[in-house]
Amino acid sequence: MGKQKKIIMNEYFDVLEKIKAQIKNAQYQILTTANVQRNILYWNIGKVILEYSIWGNKFVENLSKDLRLDFPGTQGYSVRNLNYMKQFASRIPSEEILHQVGAKINWRSTKFLIDKTKTIEEYIWYAKKSLENGWSSTILIHQIESGLYQRQVLSDKTTNFKNQLLAPLGEQAEEIIKDPYVFDFLPNAKQMREIELENALVQQITSLLLEFGSGFAFMGHQFPIQIGNREFFIDLLFYNVKLHCYFVVELKMVEFEPEFAGKLSFYLSAVDGELKTEKDNPTIGLLLCKGKDRMVAEYALQDINKPMGISEYRLSNEISKELQQSLPSIEIIESRINR
Figure 1 (tube, rainbow, N blue to C red):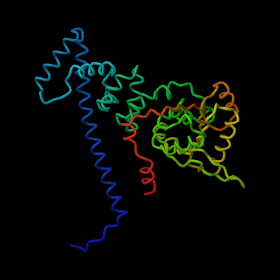
Figure 2 (cartoon, rainbow, N blue to C red; figure 1 turned 90 degrees about the vertical axis):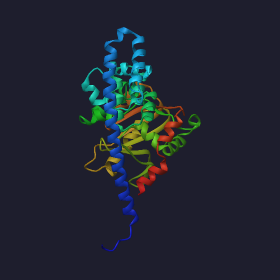
Figure 3 (cartoon, helix red, strand yellow; figure 1 turned 45 degrees about the vertical axis):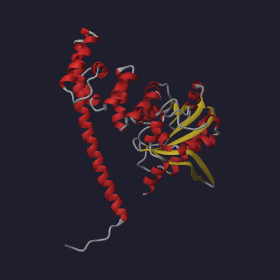
Figure 4 (cartoon, helix red, strand yellow; figure 1 turned 120 degrees about the vertical axis):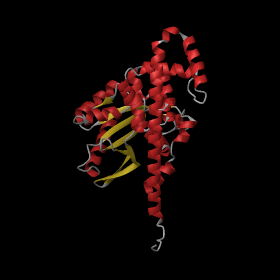
């Protein structure tokens, strides 16, 4: 047996992270498989209940009682849960949709989707986003309660993306924008000044990234950029790994004014000239304002030749303790970045 080498700690931690990632992936696969099998069963039970729903509530009560007698060690056959199965089968109209999204969401999330979504389109949209982004039940609940579907899909957005960006990038950029954005995680937000709002958002960067959506990597705040003999500072700079572009955010704690668009356009040109590489798509900008007159905002963007959007933001300070505990702190994120 050869001589043992001393453990190199940096390499050891890399090995440890690889093994942990493999374990977590295996656990996820096992959990997903279990979810799929259970949800397929529940959907099929729900179909039967739907078929015989003409028998009324007494039918479900009897069914619950007999199933619990025949399967005494199995949970999930209460009257309430059987009724959820019935609604689940009603919401998911086909086996194709069931296997695409319906069967892969955990049952707690499924019940919340049944309770809180109004249409099959909204239900499927949230289910797909949950799978794409790996949302826990807690985060899914938060996204539904914040009206994410209405803000991201149904809102009448103010952007010039489709005119300034080639397809499909223009459509993809349009999809990631919300109006309004909801910052429900800031203490004493009503009394903040602009720079205080910016600093608070940075301190709560994981919550901000959750609100912005998947694909955003935080590059910095008051990000310095040298142009000629002058130095300028960008409020918040991100990189979107899905769109492969820089994303500039300017915060305004006042109503939108047309001159804001000109300043943001200058920042976009600066980032394109100083930071963007040949592999990157054109830089996108977002003005976040306390409010806006939609017609004024639309006129302001007409002759701007840089891709940008104008959205409002809302402050509420109502994020749940459960969600706060499920998000990593800025210290954890920084430790991951600096490793």
